[in-house]
Length: 334
Image (cartoon, rainbow, N blue to C red; front, side, top):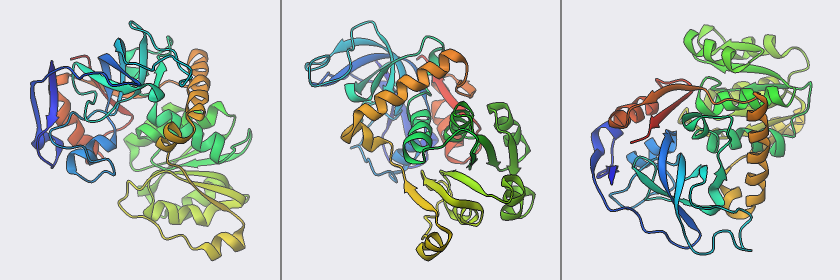
């Protein structure tokens, strides 16, 4: 089968090599799928660079999130030890099992990270529904307990996780303030449903956020950026507000001033969504069911900004890593 493999560490456009490889063997608790679409994610870039916490042995096939058709089911799938029934021919979405990622004609998925693909979404849209949307849902619903009528600030709101958080916030009945960097990204956030858009390149971010959230402040902040974005969030978070720390795409990991959290009475909540697949997969299953229902109602719909030909995957990953994209880039069927 054809597959893009990382043969050495570096920028994706430099280190990905297209070749013919053997189809993966299916271990217990996994399924082998025909790849229909692969949603590109920042962890794919970090793995290619050797900067991610998961470091597959070289060579490996990147692509951590896919939509596919089940070709083969490993032992132990569909039994009493799992809460999912997966059968050959099913259209599914989920996270892949490294080193057999989705930038190939076939890949492996662990059954715990495999979900039924919503019929309301096409293959490219469905491929985006797992990581970003479940991160947004678990962060806003389980961790922050966002309530109808509250105000949520979403940083990096034009990106894949950010647009998901905007849509999830609106589906929950919240007022969404989206923070972006530039006019084109502002248009993406508005199209995703944001009530107010703050362009951080237009002046002082704290001043703009204070104007956007009003005197009562932000009840919830969803922050995949860190650095200055986190610092600004602490200035505008409300009494009993909640800051959900999702990641650090800025490259700067904040050092929270716990004295400030104490005197202002707000919570700092960490979110590592992937841990739920290991420690409490029922949370991920419930999140997927809710998101699928919202997709059927038209409340959530992944923002696929570009459908990338299979041959162009390395260049697309490099653009993603450089912060030059909005929404989601999806590599179409090989």
